[in-house]
Image (cartoon, rainbow, N blue to C red; front, side):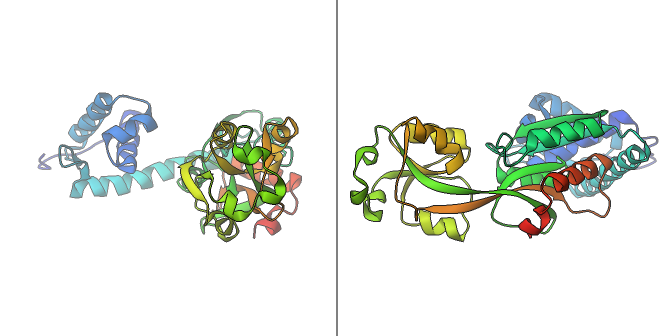
Length: 313
């Protein structure tokens, strides 16, 4: 495409929409991967990118058998798109902050098992937030730790609730509670009816186990290192189902497993020493000026968990 005698002119909502699609394609590494993120078909994405290229009079990317890649001009446009969208978001946040009744969207992403744990006080925090900021729309979904951290850092969500064993520089961690994770087998597994005196580490390590699905910290690694793994399950619900099959053993938070133990569906194995601790925290991106919805939720976290920052530091 030629730049000769070309002037872009006014940039409106339609161009901004196309730039957001372009950003998603780049962030996801191609058209196919962006389909899920954007919830539109690959052909529709292609049409938007082609229209954007025509509007800018630039070739932004190369696509084909060799894969997706940005042109030199595309890399510049991508960098400027990030700055533009960040500026628009900041403008929106500042305007919303000046209102006595803040509006906008509060986006919260939680790891499974955390939102309904009474120690998190998540329903109570949501109730308080809705009372203090009734005009703000709430969006809440479930995801896994690394994805939640990534989305908070990239401003795709405002607050995350995660199990944590590390602290990334760009995030603030508000400790909510700690889980003790113990080793369990299900009814039907040979370990279930074995006398406790016969369940040694050597015996346990012969049974097929399930990895938790996240990089373990030092305490967890010591428990997992010698086990025989043939599967992975990050979410507690799927991990529990695999244990209940009788074919696998795995670690679960003892509070999560308690009901199934009482009902005789699970058995803790390996004694009191076969365990590790996992902290649960709310995470928010570090910034000089939080948008008003996030600031309100931050204050609510501190009110329900007054020692949260001390516990997470």
